[in-house]
Length: 180
Image (tube, rainbow, N blue to C red; front, side):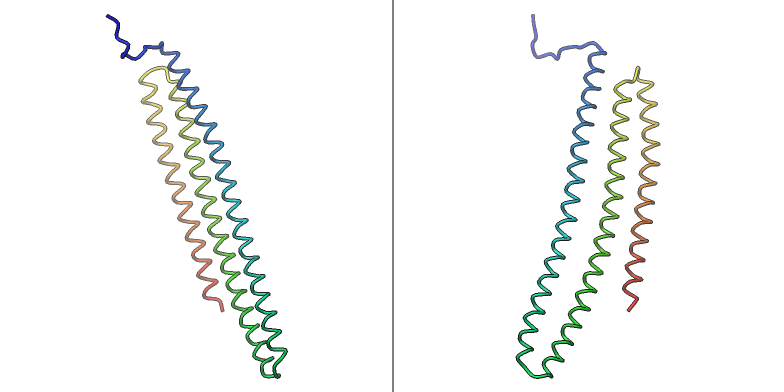
């Protein structure tokens, strides 16, 4: 009696080749994903830069309108306009400066997070390749123990780095706020 519902039994070498091929395809897919993530980050930074340029142009058009209005009035209005422009310029410059520092801090944290996740994914793919090539269960168990120890160390190092980075950036932001 023939049972077509049973899985086909393949020799161990065929399974190993299939696993190695799968790991290679996953690695290639991840490379495309990492490249797309980098492109998205660059697009975000470009978009924020264009937003700041837009704010600059709006600020300039508001100044022109104020010039036109005040030129038609008396000298007192002109003084008020100059004071308004100076206050507006200080406010805008402070905003732009803070936004620039915030974007730089976000970029640094984001970069560190991307590097950490990329390192972890690549380590996992390397582990999968070694696992696919393992000769027996004993080697598989040894590979698991080694990978878990390395991954634990790697995650600890990454968390310490991220903590130090965010602490440094927070201190820098606080020092800019304290300075008049």
